[in-house]
Every structure is written in C-alpha cells, then in structure tokens.
Image 1 (cartoon, rainbow, N blue to C red):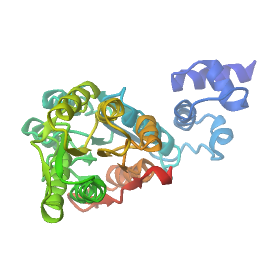
Image 2 (cartoon, rainbow, N blue to C red; image 1 turned 30 degrees about the horizontal axis):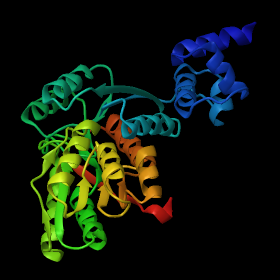
Image 3 (tube, rainbow, N blue to C red; image 1 turned 30 degrees about the vertical axis):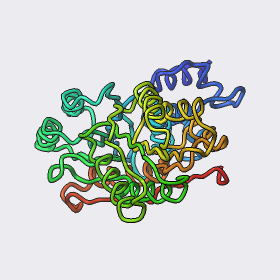
Length: 345
C-alpha cells in the first residue's frame, strides 16, 4: 500500500497517470521517452526514490534547483516535437542541479505573441531560451526580462542582438552555402531554382538565403534563383507554390526549403516529377524527409544535431543561472550540421 501512495505522489508531480508511472518503473509496457523523462524529472524534483530506478542517480535534496524556461514554435511540427522530446531527455542528464523544464510553444510567428510569451516567463524560470523572429517587439521584450534578472539565449535563429545572452545553433550562412553546393552539384542542366524561407524576420533564414544565393552566383551562373517565397513554414503554402512554379517553369532544376514546410515540396515533386529530376534540399530529418531521401525525391537534408544542442544549451543555461555575471556576454555557439543523403540513412 505504501508503494501505491508513493507512485500516486510521483504521478501527480509528473502530470501523468499512476499506470504510466507503474509501466515506467516496471517495464510492463513501452513508455515514450518524453513520458519517462517527465517522470524522472519529477522524481528528482520531489526527491522520490524512483529516480534511481529510472536513471541510476540518487536524488540529493541539497542540489540547487534550476528552472529552465524554453519557448519553441509550432508544437505540432515534427521538428519541434523532436526538439521538445530531446529537451526532456537531456534534462535528465544535467549534472549537479535539480532541473525542471518550463516549456511553452508559440502558435505563430507573430512578434507580439513571442514578446508576450517571453514576458510571461518572468518568475516562472531562472534562465530562458527561445526560438523567435528578429523584431523590435521581441528585442524590447528581451531587454525587459533581462532587466528583471533573466538571461535569454537564442536558439537556431539569432534575435535581439546586443540584448540576448548568447546564440546556440548552426552557422546559418554556411548552411545556406552547403545547400547551394549540393544544388549546383545535383541540378540537371541550366534553369531555375526555387527558394523558400519561413519569413523575412527569421535571421537564420536570411543568412541561409544569403549563403545559398552567393554560392550559386559564384559557382553556378547557369542556375537562376527566382524571387524568394515566404511559406510561413507551412506545408500547404509550400505545396501550392511548388505546383505553380513547376507548371510555370519546365526548366525548374532545384528547390531549397531553408526552414519548415518541406513536406509540401516533397509532396508536390512526388506528384509532378520523377525522383531526382529536381534537386531538393531541406532543413530537418523527419519521417517525411527520411522517406523522401529513400525515394530519391530529397537530395540533401541539413539537420540540426538536437542532442548536442540540448546538452550544450543546458550547460550554458546552468552556468547563467548559478554564476551570474561570470559568462561572456553575447557568446555564440555554432554546431556543425548533420548532413544526410540517401545512402547515409
């Protein structure tokens, strides 16, 4: 009976059912990585002895608690689902603290929504990281929360330069040049190239566009990059635009989707062109892009190494939370991308 009470306490702290805790502890059925991570994080937070069974670690009460605030975009998108799952998993490995993840999602790219979410994290976390567009409203919000003692780290795409505490992600200029290199290498003859960005306020997408265009301008003048299309990182807008451009330009040789929405490009090419006829470079390894690689529809995936990103992120955030004033201001951490082609999956 005492064991049941302990499981109920742990289930309540983790926000899951008692049955889920029972499965995680006893291995009766499969439990998702995210659920297991939530249970382990709750066990560490409340000092529950189940932590040892879940992670092999004890639950010392004398460790400092750090509330890690993270704000991401588009909760339903495969990339951000994988990002959230990796955050939960990596949280279990953060040493010397009792870590708690405070995770929120912005439903849109609207600067006002992100600025409001950033402000709402004050008092709920000890250090903050976010994906956001580079916009004056967001910069003002970062300045405001920093004034209240909250360090803010940029993830994937830089914003609020001069105000934020650091950037962690890819070198987006080089990612764009890599996409240009593959497009020039795989394009079948002279012709047109299509480029998608999520929005003009994504600093990372702006850098990828610059790198992509500059590489093709330098090395492949036979390829004409058409006017950039904003797809708001949505499947449908990308699908419709690719369909229209394929009909308008029979000599379309390449497509680069610098952010989200690649599923639409994959679907349109699958319907209208033979595999490999049009080079397609996309920016995340998901079930859709993996299948596209296997079919020959996708040429290259430039993926973010989420495991390494989350590990370094929690290291930096822990330092910021516990060692105020001891971190270099506005530091940048560039991680090498994971490059995937058909033969590597």
